[in-house]
Picture 1 (cartoon, one colour):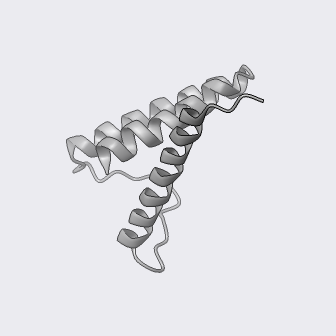
Picture 2: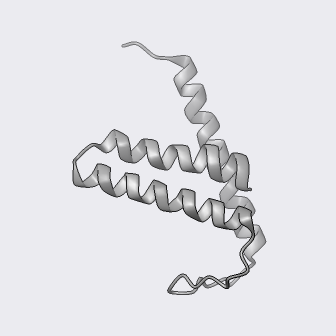
Length: 92
């Protein structure tokens, strides 16, 4: 069995980003936070907020397309790239 150490290290890095982003969000939102059941924008979102929402919409569209066509690598890549390269590296 071939084990790519660099791939394992990359996924370790991803898990670390996942952990830190979740920890940051939970700490920032405070105890007892309840999200609104529907997304309602205030109209006063910053450019960065609008950008991340557009990137999220794109990732969702890619994921839905991958699910409908049974191309699961498309789904995982869309989620992985959004979380790692856009949400964690730029937005947070």
